[in-house]
Length: 624
Image 1: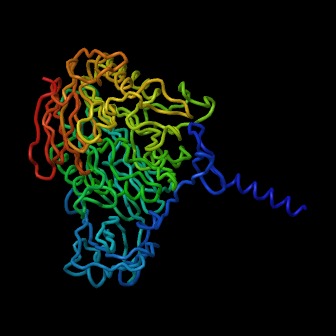
Image 2 (image 1 turned 30 degrees about the vertical axis):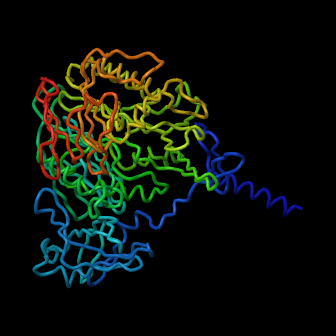
């Protein structure tokens, strides 16, 4: 009897130990020793497994040195394909990338090698590794189906007839949080090291060995070009950046905008495991050549909608690698979209229905936290939806964090305010599971926006405010059935712990419009995406923006406003659809596009270019 009782107690303890605490903001979601489940019609539907075939870290820590070169074990037995490789010469140009060698290496059961000594010496030693005893090698993993999986790097040394893989800068360095006094420079290394950055005669260091580095520079002069050198053990990487001007500067400058770069069709670099690296490289190069001071990129960087943290991190890495050579010099400021979703998925085999919710625990295993882990962004947004009217437990943390997905920043006389319209996102079945709606701005985020708009209206250094959000207020092609319209159906709204929001999607849209149009004179335009096309929408009081027989109060607009949609960064295109406001749409285009804003004091001129062909798609003046 004692043995039986002990076994029962042990089973109970194991159940508690392995069950996952479910956030109270969900409904009909439970957890036990088998996993997270959806309870529906007296049955438990367990979340789909991640089915990881590889660990992301194994793709960039695979190399070990040999007497002839480098051997790779990706610990991915199912991987069969080809490893392309070539040196990266950091002294030859400002935007270093691999120059692939004429030979490649076959990958079998996840293992391959590169014979550096016999293949990449003599006339092919374009980085002088034979003289210096060190170098950087770039490699590309391509499956036997021809799909590009990952672009990696490995630093190596050669001493006493033996090659050795060294700690490598696998991502970055990236310029972030640009200010008149400096920036935060981030980078990732393949193993924990204490790195440093040298600017002129000053050294800025890590406090301890880490893999994810963020080094803050805050003692430079405004509007000044600086060279900086990243030092990682015996390796040095030199680049340059320019500090921001003093607040309120009316000096002319250009910035760029785009969104939606998830994988496109056509093969090759248009789909580097989850992102359209081909178009993103073109966009980054065009932005830099146009002397853009920063690039705002708001949502759907990757395919996402995944159950695997490993695959999501790989997709983010591929996006960062696509723009990395240019991000060494200018900031790429990113926003959150629906394809940044990291999900639990419940598949009902009886009905065929699938239910998707934001992964948890929210603090370290949600779509929001995964985004935070991959980017360095302003941290001046709201905390979360905790303590809102719909919070089921005001005394504890129940919601995901808004950290680094809702924020604002300024450059000269321009402020950019970024919202997250896919926060706490339940892509399917939210009336059963609870969760937020695609394109719905929840209460605490709206209150934060009210506060920021009011502050910016009083800020004498700011002349122009741009609101950037992934989802258009007025969709025109691809998302007319959702975004902030839902085919004119206001019944769509967020649900928290089974309680439905009082305000519907169109009512919430109007609250946002009232704030940024009627209660602000500085807000210039909405910069949106989600729909994979470019267009300019002129929004005024005469524009029809309600469904027939709309029962709620209609908002009067006090001035003309603009929505600039540019979701044309490589995701599969959407054609134009008929809407009540179609007559107000200008120059709808399915070309790949980058929007360039030329700001000169009180004036704003807009140019829209195809980054692939350099064709001018559109051009107009927003403010004279």
